[in-house]
Amino acid sequence: MGIEGECIENELKQKWHLSCLKCTKCLGVISNDYFLVNHQIVCEADASSFIADLRNAGLTTLDKVEKRRTRMLFIE
Image (tube, rainbow, N blue to C red; front, side):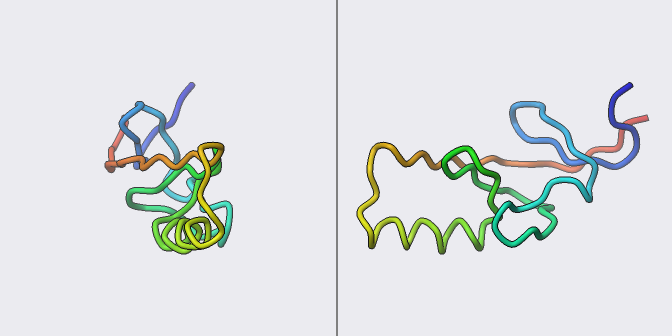
């Protein structure tokens, strides 16, 4: 059995309950687009800060940053 009711889905068709998609840095619930920074889910605010810090420290090709777009769904 999968997710039922309101959920959030990204462009890869991955789904989460509204309260389950959380930022790994601030632990806040993510309800909009988010980033994967080195394979960790990060909210837009923390991603911006993290990316700025990486640029100042010298962003390398080992650092991977991807934006994930989301949408709200209701699954019956």
